[in-house]
Length: 168
Image 1 (cartoon, rainbow, N blue to C red):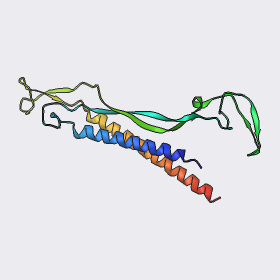
Image 2: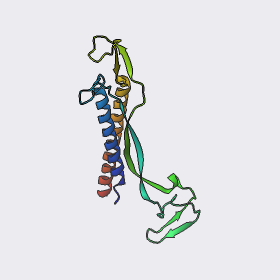
Image 3: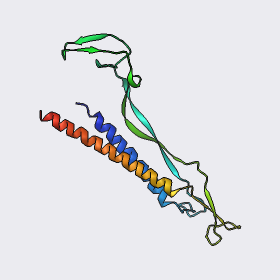
Image 4: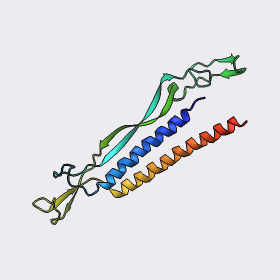
């Protein structure tokens, strides 16, 4: 039995958790004007990039869409006549899930405000603040949370189907 559906859902949950952790870090540093060592420096927002994880092999099984041939054949093991329509879905690739390809610094411009009372203000009274927009971060957090929930529901549905199949 293949547990690919669990692998895909689990990888999606892991990727979305990393995205939520990154967003939480951005929100926590929304007013940070110092580096961790205490030197003057503005926090730069982090973003997450995902990529699909593919199996190392092409699908070459007896199922439809397995290759570009248009022939059919009888499978004596199953007793079925399997027809190949000549259509290759996803170019024969098998998806194994998703992963975080990188966490990178956003290119959004930093914000500058006038606040001469701020301890990190320059000679003219301007302070550089992180390029973090709380509204964008909250929308990203809700989106990542919903994607995490969808992956969890998918895994739960597969579990239910397997349990139902085993009770037949």
